[in-house]
Length: 272
Ligand SMILES: Nc1ncnc2c1ncn2[C@@H]1O[C@H](COP(=O)(O)OP(=O)(O)OP(=O)(O)O)[C@@H](O)[C@H]1O
Ligand SMILES: [Mg+2]
Image 1: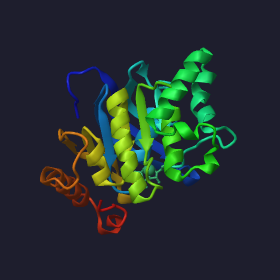
Image 2: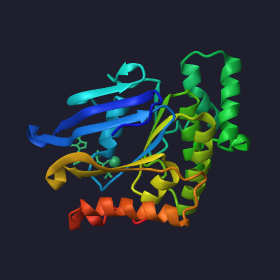
Image 3: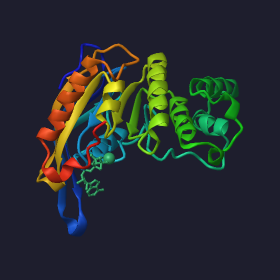
Image 4: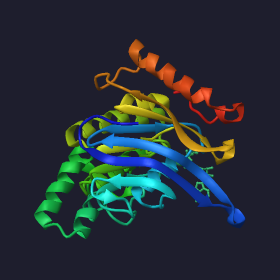
């Protein structure tokens, strides 16, 4: 599925991934994935549990190798993790022994940036995630939503071209989650990284993305994970989740997901 004429941040061509399961059995998680992502584009992946969303994200992150096909980031073929691709997971992954500010400064420090630059970046991203007054606190002193904001700031402080997010708001209560969706939209508008974002929530995908990709299948459903549908979303941001246009697209996406699903998998798709 091809993006616009803007330069590509990611080119995923006929990609397949087969894991080695228990007792050496082959588990074909993905087959024939074609997805081009334009620079600065916000793409969400949705689909039932086990269809390979996390696998695709891990391939792009370079945590796993592709089994077949071609996977290129801006610097060429992906052959491992790199600072051009930053990853945010559901469980924050902060260093508990470092303060909020030190967590954010960690990456730039590792890369040996001048200390004035590190200070400036840390301040910039602290402000962006609205945690200035918590700079000297430790992660354990913060709520889940605040910790996730630190995690986002920490990744952004490395200036990644591509931001990979795997259900980053999945563990949060719905109010916090909505707030973070708004914050992420604002941050994305300011910084304009390319984003590949996995979520179980169709509504969240539709609130955030320029394009929503629906995946289906998976080894537990007898066919490898693959892409079945996509929706380009041109609604102005911040999006009104009660608008009729919003809900028309949401309906189409839910239909696309449910059309592919055996009954057993239905329970794992959030209605929102
Ligand atoms: N390391 C692994 N070894 C063997 N099989 C794996 C491995 N990782 C994932 N799988 C299998 O690959 C399939 C896709 O898994 P993946 O985690 O990518 O799905 P997902 O869409 O992210 O699901 P969820 O929505 O539940 O997070 C599943 O059947 C899973 O069991
Ligand atoms: Mg997953």
